Image (cartoon, rainbow, N blue to C red; front, side):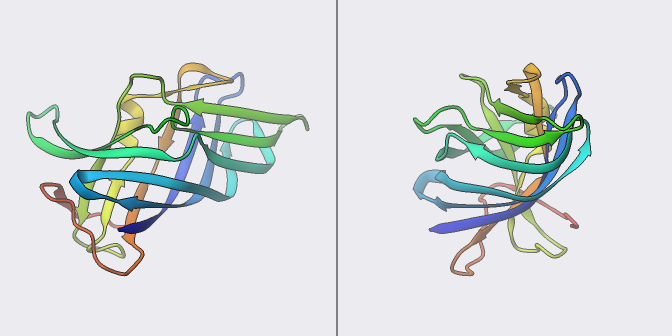
Length: 189
């Protein structure tokens, strides 16, 4: 089933010479397949602004090494409860990640590429939304996964890259999606 998602994401390199965070609107396209096997085909980041750090203007961001493969898995959390996660991994194009280009605070051009390290599992929390503007949608919670498995960035090095935000996954046909055995939460956005 073809799907798309919408989000507001913050991309951070916490260990760059001047730690930098940018905020962007995000849309992506992909598909939800059988047995929880999915693909992220495109990732578009627009309207990027500086939250803190080295980027002052002309901020452009994009996903790298698309498409990404994903697989729904059931894991045990720290409270010994079962929860559904969406494991994001290399589909053959390279490690999933993102790139930020901008004009830095001293007027020069800056590029920072952040990729999740080979062999690490980047597992997004998956929840069914029970209220708010996205009631009935499926949400991919990025914050905890990013904190558990920081990315390696070209500026800040190992474990310096973080993504913060919640992605809402929507069917292109208008059909409501539900993640079986996922936690149902009240998320108000």
